[in-house]
Image (spheres, rainbow, N blue to C red):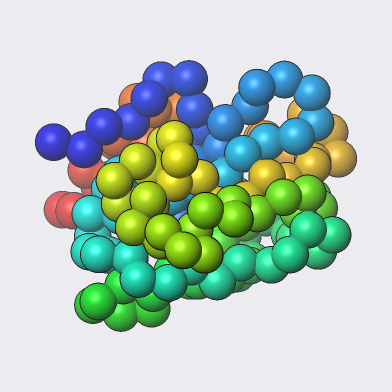
Length: 131
């Protein structure tokens, strides 16, 4: 059964956002998303310094099944990308909420998190999508 940590925020596009405090957030894809995609073989994300807008594509995940777009869950500037994914893209599958994180984004303000779902709302969203 997929797992959705209660301390994260979620987008309807199946990305998670960790908010450790301050203006920098960490972004990855949910357990549901990585399960749907299958074995990830390549991760394409921007280098640090690129601005992203919430809801817009900012990269992609390539699996043995297909290529899937990544959508920014928040607006801001990419400050880091996970360098481990260059040689170990399967981390997205094996540890989606830990070592499989994708990018860090510096958000402009707390309102950048408005519209994200909590874990219970995200579970409801997935259930509604599956109907």
